[in-house]
Structure formats: C-alpha cells, structure tokens
Length: 78
Image (cartoon, rainbow, N blue to C red; front, side, top):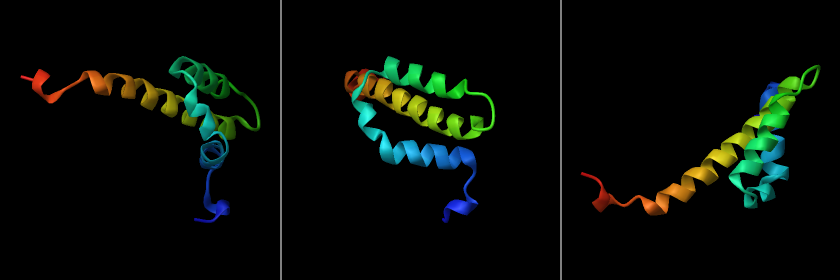
C-alpha cells in the first residue's frame, strides 16, 4: 500500500516498527512508559504520535505475555 493511503496513525506505527524494534530488549515497564508518553502528545502531530505510542504499548504487552507463557503448561489445565 502506498504511503499516501495510510493514516497518520499507521505511518507512525510503521515508522517505529521499522526503526525502533531494537527497543524490544527493554523491560515491559519501560515500553509502557514510552508508549504512554507518546500517547499524551497533543497538537498537529498527535495522531502520528499515537501510532508510535501504540506500537510501544503493544510491544510491552507482548513482552509481558511472553514472561507468562513458559510458566503455563497444558498439564496444568483441568
């Protein structure tokens, strides 16, 4: 899809996904704080910033869920 058809939110999300995925090595708390900071942006670039913040929140949630996955086993289920 060409860039002209993307919303500012999608542009921000895709930009951070490509350029800042190395931040996935940080703790989930750091990623949540970073995402919340981007979500609080106001003004002309707020939609772009929200896309960026959403990516960091999503990354933090995935990281947090991955911490629980090894502890959960099928034989533990009833």
